[in-house]
Length: 334
Image (cartoon, rainbow, N blue to C red; front, side, top):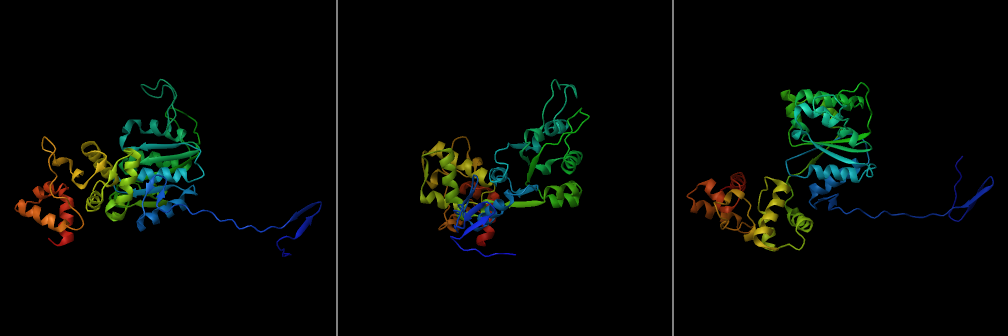
C-alpha cells in the first residue's frame, strides 16, 4: 500500500527514523547559443544544439553530415565533452589521410614483425580511444574493402591487431562524419548499405553558413577572441560578412578574418576583408565595391556594367567566388 506523507512528518522504519523535507531543485539553463566550441543563435543552430545535447548522453554511434568547414569535428568533440565519457580520450582519425595498406594498422594496431617496418607492437586508434570516443572523419572516402573491415569491427566489437591471433575488445563510442551523400553512394554501390546503417543509428547535420547568416557577427567575434585577441569588427565589416555566401563555411570565415588582421590591423573595416584569395595579382589590390545588405544589388549591377557583363571579371571585382555571384544574380533576378 502507498501511504501519503507531508512535509515535516517524522517516519520510522525499524530502528531508523527520518523527517520528510520537500525541496525544489532547479537546474540552470544551458546557454542556447553554444555547444562545446560551436556557437550560434540562429534557430537551425539551436535545434542542432538541443539534438546534440540529447544524443551526448547515449552510447549509440552517431553520423555527423555537413559540408566541408561546417564544424563536424567540433560537434563530435562537443558530444564527447557533454557525455559520460568526458574523462576518457577523444581520438580523431581522418580516413582520407590513411594510406590503404596502413588502414588496418592505424585503426586496429599491429604486432611486432607483422609486416616490413613493424619493429614493435603498436596500438591502433581503437585502443587509444578505449573508454572514450573514436571520431572517424571523412568516412565516405573509404574504399569498399576497408569499409568491410571497419564494419566487421563495429558489428563484433572485436579488434584484431595485424599479425595477432587473439582479438581485443576496446570500449569506444563511435562518431563518424562525412561531407558526402552516403545514401547516394549506397545506391551507386560505392558505400556499403550495412555500414551506412551501422554508422547512422543517430545522425545530425551541421548547417552551412548561408543558412545561418544572422550568426555571422557572433561567430566572427568568437573566432577573433580565440585566434586574434584584441581584434574587433566594425559594423560595416559585419554587414559585408553577412552579404557573402561562404562556400567554404566556417573554415573560410576564419581565413578571411586572419587575412584581415594580418593585412589591416586589429580594427577590421569592410574594406579590409579580402574574400577571394584569387583576387591578388602579384600585389594586393583594392577589393572593389564593398558589398553590404543595403547596396548589394547596386554593387553587383555596377560591377557587371564595368566588366561589360563578364561575370567572372565582375566576381573578381566584387571580391567573391563566381559561384557566389551566380547565386546572388538569381537571388535578385539580375
